[in-house]
Length: 386
Ligand SMILES: Cc1ncc(COP(=O)(O)O)c(C=O)c1O
Image (cartoon, rainbow, N blue to C red; front, side, top):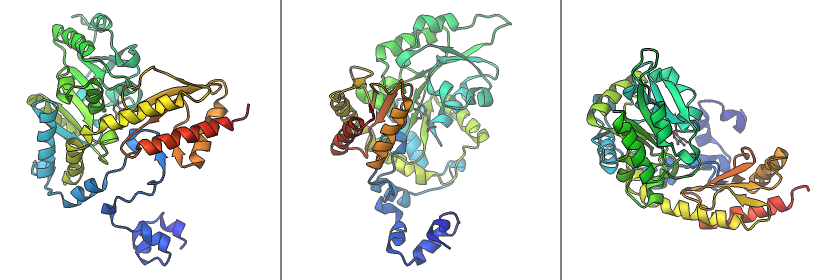
């Protein structure tokens, strides 16, 4: 059996331990060494690519666990209590992913056949595979919401009146930080919340990057989450935990969500192993996101000096830089040449979308690596065909 073929069998671990080749032996290092085969790669595709820190891996190995479906996993219980406290809600629930948390919020708030109001480019609409229709069975009423800002008058105009022909409006969803890299100001959230209250509607906040938004606004996560009734935030992404998100809100909401999580197959057993990384994400990683934002700002300023580069926004608000490179929108093949040119230097980026590149910084991209990215980009674009 060749080493390559071994990777395709369930026995590859055993094989590695017996392997003669030192390079393959290295792959069998203990997990808590923080080893990652991409350690030397600079991965700017997203902050979802972060791998857990060595401390997280150690905490996971050491975590006290129980059966969380029985409610007796102490590490999950601690994570849920700490999360609720941190975002200023009565209770919180550990869920497998951000998508799961958003969909569970809809499933919990919304009667089957009701309607929700949300931005047309938000994650729930664009990237959750139609889950709103498939799981909660809701109809979505979308509004153009550039940068995540929902116009309160447009929301009000879409709240259904009492007419047997209409679906019943059951929820307003917002996203902060928005996936465009913009942060919705608290004042804008306030106005939206007052529209929701006037119509007795709950607000769900997709806060996949809640702590990035709070860092950018210079307020606590609880102050952002106070503008919504429920909030989902991710422990993975910039917070580096390998898996998991939290759904927080009033106790009665979380009690119902716990039952509905079971329906969705999200009742996990010894999940304390994952929650242990989540606790470190909350305690340590939430405090350092400003570094990622500063590195993104640095990268934006340096990239802007390269001839042909134009930034999409005058300021970088979180850990995302959006920019155009002259000629790429008209000739997509140039974009692909940039992607492959950077890949040859160990730098991973996504192909541009409609001519726009997005670089995302995170824990594993420090200032020195940020500078390397800029230098490599300048070198690659200078060698593009005219
Ligand atoms: C704004 C937003 N919401 C929700 C999610 C979903 O998170 P997950 O990938 O954990 O399902 C993401 C993921 O990138 C996101 O950017």
